[in-house]
Image (cartoon, rainbow, N blue to C red; front, side, top):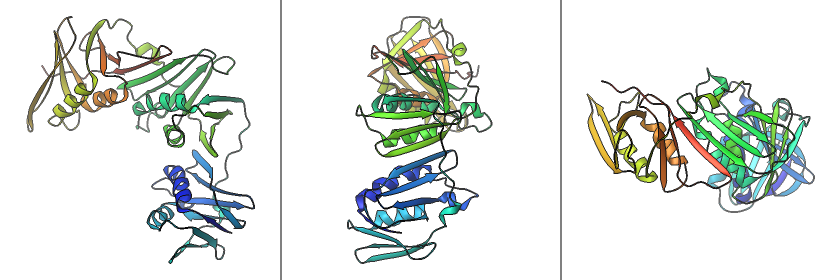
Length: 371
């Protein structure tokens, strides 16, 4: 195996595939990338068994072959190489030589036979969607995915596509984010998937805000994204996803509107003195204002006040400051609307202005305030 490539092309390729390489693994070969060099193509592949990425690398092939190379070590080497052509060759079964200008490395790889095979997908459904639309929907929901591995049904983004409507939903049981888009979508009937956030995050990394289309294939076990010479294979997660429609309040009719960025900054200021476990802040909604407070006996207390549009009953609500700031960060526009009912019911937070063909909302569960 032998090929030439540029530093910029190799750096860009590594940026696409390194996100998938697991930081720790009991299977050493998963810490490696597979270099699959054919007469007319150079393919770089990474996998963690649940998600795989395959992308093409621009370059000149001297000799076909295959080998796996330590992923992060290769990334570190390439980052520090001069901006000159890079020559990579296989010296024997597992020893790889990297040359660039006057710099030379020899590193040990692992034979390609140990690298897991890319899954074979028997296409059950196939559709194309704009990359910009997918990026937007993923970004507006993925932050709310649960990291608790004891609740596997919450470890993914629920994706539903219908002929005239598409939505993505994520929740960790304390907050929920839902993005809904109306339009014409190329499916028959209703399709539902539970997708790994790692694969969806890779989709964000790969695509841009252009209207280029993403090719999507689905079988019973995998979802496959193809975009610009890169393919992402994601094993579908097992559900069932919670019936989230039942927890979104229907009668929250007390609306408080305030500056989104100012509220987010205020929340972060006050959170400095919040409890390290609960991160609780008190949000006191008053006529014409909202006051944020934290009070932790061994730390001290903080108070901040913002102007707000509100003329309903006054109330004090406890929220996790980290979750509240995350929601405010991920909604659009200059102003945020809080749709409230009582201090012990979930609040709905959404942008005041939304595009006519979409609806983005976030739900946040309250924390009980000390008497």
